[in-house]
Structures are given as structure tokens and as C-alpha cells.
Length: 149
Image (tube, rainbow, N blue to C red; front, side, top):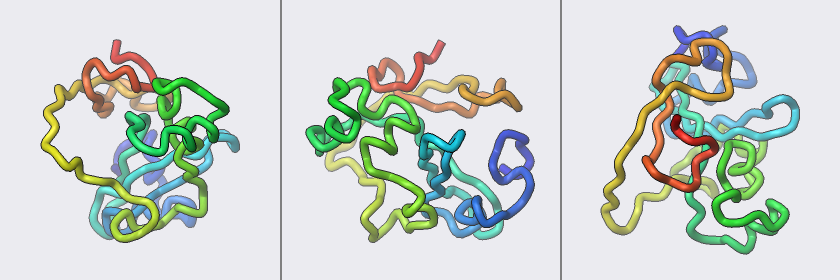
């Protein structure tokens, strides 16, 4: 989304955002405010500069390890934000540019078909173009970083 001012691709390719301009399916990991890692999935074709920030997830396996990594937080707080998710999963800058197929980091397809009700809202945590409805979430999920209202 090179045409969108809050996107890291806005200024074109840099060493930092290189995975966004590669083929889709690569991890784009960056450090936010020098503190929190954020995990994105490269989603465009080569040269397009696109990625999707993974803001939260429902932890299903490895709960003891994730809880230890997060200082004993309860289940709903383990991965309820981009920094928390990376801390719980052990995702850091060493994962930047890693393929999400056939590596130690990936996105799994559920064994059974799940049916979710998907919500859409304005984005959170940004100031430029914050009103664009580019935030997607599972309605009613207790694992969201912030409520959908």
C-alpha cells in the first residue's frame, strides 16, 4: 500500500522494509518505538510494497511457553497486541524476511473448517489515515488487542 501514508512502504523500499517489496509470504518484522517487535505478513507481489500487521491471535498450543515468555499473563492477554504476540511467540528481528512456508515461522491452516464472523473497523495505534477501515478481526473474540468499538 505504497499510496497510504501510514504504511511502511510509503517512502519506497528501504533496507528495513525490504520484505514488503519482495514476493508475498515473507515475514516483515520491525521494532516499534525501539521496544516492541511487530509481525507482518508480506501480501503483495514483487515490487508492490504490501504487508498485513498481525495484531493479535488466539493462543492454542504452547501455552505454558507463551505464558512464561509473557511473565505469567492469563490466556486472553498472551497475544492480545502486536508486541505481546511477538513476545509470546519469540518473534524478533531475526525473523525479518523469513519465508512463512517451510521455515520455523509460518501460518497454519486449521485442520477443520472454522466459521468466523469477521468485523471491520478503522485502524488503531496510528495517526495518519487512521480512519480507513483496514482493521479486520473476529467478532466477539476475547483475544483482541482492543475492542472493535
